[in-house]
Length: 505
Image 1 (tube, rainbow, N blue to C red):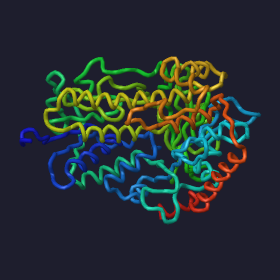
Image 2: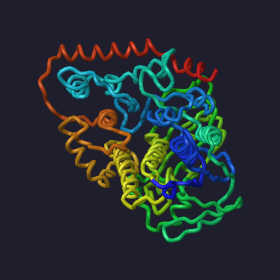
Image 3: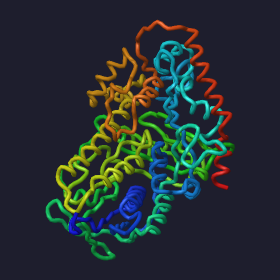
């Protein structure tokens, strides 16, 4: 390849998690051994806004590890705790007067005998009174014992069970900014005043600190989509028909007396949406994701604070308008949208940082020279579209199989599957057979597979109706092995508090 074909300059507009994750990753990719590409990030002065997405999926570990970041330093500087999954509460009617709940872990259990573990559980344990997650996975046993995923001698980025993090999103951005600028990324604090375009190509961006030109521009400006909107019209597909929760009220609060950080996220359903609770070392981040056509901002804030209780001491409150949907084209001309500028699906499964990771990683393999073909641009957009479509389907699953009928919101939630015809077809199939990988054929960019689907399906009591003959003694032996494995994991791991004390000492 001649030098004229090589990429010389990339300008990223917008900071936050999306901007600095992208800058750090691309700089590591292009400039690890020598300076090949000049990468500049232009962002407005840090105003310390309250982040919504402070929880992650477990694959984010691989992103940080790939860049050679020290895990303990990363987590210490972001007030982080460990996350082994999500506890869902109140997504179904109460059972025998008790609030319905289930746990969605990150792990995949492969143990089995004549049948796989899921089939075995449905056949022999469905009516035992035990939750599916409690009967099949280690993580449920860990959180019940108050344990995190780490043993005393667990290496960085490894644990007894897969794990993600609860992270202060603003501190993560500052940490990555420090690492990226030390590695050679140019950082400019400035506000963009004009985007100069020639058709679908950006020529330059004008700011109060000068004009910036580049071979490629990456839009990390959040919901504003400042760059991508400048080069494309009619470039948005809304998901609000299927996922109407388009508002959030987020708060930070001090821990109530006697409460310690939990190694899992909580997602509790309320009247017109759900509340997240994410425990950091120094505070709890929480917020109400709701349907803005059903509640006013004042009503939503009142319901959230009533749920949290009168003993709560609040630090900050922020109301957020969310654009639920995605781009039709994530790559237009020489502009690529990553993060909220590319799309957003409510943060029910903590996928915000995952989608940034995916966008940056795919960009590094597609951004091959200064003149990228339309086929390559289309490939990138298609892969990102697949990721958002898969995620949309998975999130709709959480809503459409509820039996709650106490509000118009939850009655409509049961109908949300009508906007996902492929999911509707699969649910009809899963009424009669186990959910398995071949049913999904999800794209390689998908974050969730058949095991994740089963934790939601069976946690929400959507069981298949089938009959196989089985040996009860063999089944009992199988689940005795599962219990034994769970107990071994508890014995081998530290309490979450001990892990945090070691991490933040």
